[in-house]
Image (cartoon, rainbow, N blue to C red; front, side):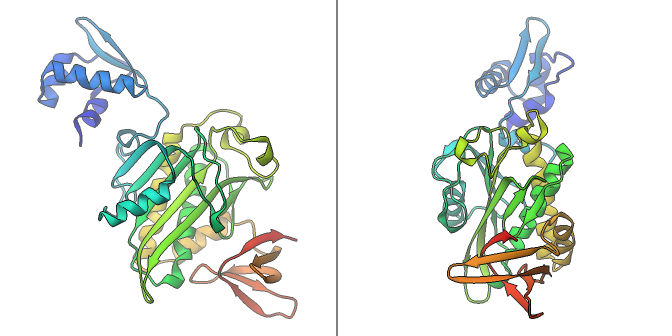
Length: 319
């Protein structure tokens, strides 16, 4: 644990802690403590300092700094290391660079803004300040045809994480969206893999969530934010921590050979079962009733002839 994280864990909101005591516990000089307090203030922490009393933590910024997100996280894989940036072109692009450098599995890359954020089919993803834009590095060692399980683990993680913090139950729309009860999009997921014929070498799961950000007029008919849905601002740090915990549990079940654990949860959050839909994948179009998902995360669709179609990808429209 870094000295800054240790210092934050020692500072209290209900009482002052002397600089001498902090220096003794941290094993540094009082000047070193002052230097770290100055750095924390520049990062947005409000810290009182009173002569002969010491320091008191007044408030924390709602910024997903590693020291905040990782505090008492205790996950198995996801969130073991976190990189935070004020801005990036794309968290997925940066995560792929980290994979090339041999970064450990479960690393999370989070940015306050992205200027080249992307969704499926290379669609532009609007990523302003106030949202949650992050990517997770995974080395799942599963066959490529099971890659959809990673997106399912992430979508369930987002749904569970948001419900835990806000009480809102979002609906998962296969393959990669989360919607409000009104059908407006709050979250999108982009999973990118590097694979051989029989195994996935690495995967980057990118997640974008509209939390406290503003949406342009052009998107307000089909998208919304958690703030608009609830009516008040929400802690991005709490949301991210909650999602990481749930995603970690779901992913751990997959690599342990128990994908049914994720399937069962997905069914609870899905708004598609027994719905008539149309799936468009390029020039191919399939229409039918959603029956289930299979063991690999493919959508099972029953057409008018009673045939069960396995849908691996495509854009879904409700009929």
